Image (cartoon, rainbow, N blue to C red; front, side):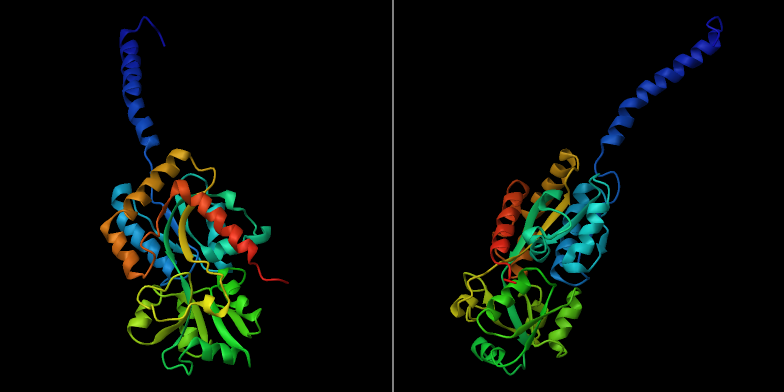
Length: 319
């Protein structure tokens, strides 16, 4: 540029001034989070408890976040196909996933392809006791009758997948001489249909997840794995009456990849916290027959997961 040309100098100063004026706005745009839709991975098929949780949370936090949360149902391998999607995505805060007790169980004994430390928990959103459910017109009226038949011959139990708490609860009875055979169904609809259609004799589930079948008198619970009676079904026997004290509640957490910017993790965890405190979410917990104190914030979610993994480790089936 020729410094002796006043027009050229004036243009240069104007461009420089415009760039300086634009810089703060560019920095602000870069700092905005989330800057695009956040993929919400559900490692199970549509219609189950994990899917319902994700969709409920989406409606509660999308407005606050200022973006959408498209649901990606990726079923398979007891939730690990979906977790692979999460862990292969960039750690940029724009992918999160539902992580449940069954999937945690597959990490027991160091068997998983990833570790708990590879995840950044945003909160434990819901906790529910599991139980055995049968078709309403099943011949077994009590668990005593079912257990007696299971000691005589094979009883098929629909579960989410091998290696998780579902299978562990079943195996605890087998260690006492029962012949329950776990049969995995990754998609919730298939699992529910298995007992209704006679492909399985029993399904292990949570009361809230099959509430529509309970309300329509298509299914009924026959035993629960819990320390206290299930709300709404206080007359149903607890497994500890039969010597099975293992009671791993089905929890559903929301996680991101470890290594995500702590500010992004904190922002999303704050959105979860706000949603959990809402009247809508408290009603959701009640409708799902879940523990009223289900929610565990991000700061305590990590230690909770470590504790649950230790419990699962201690109760892994003996080979």
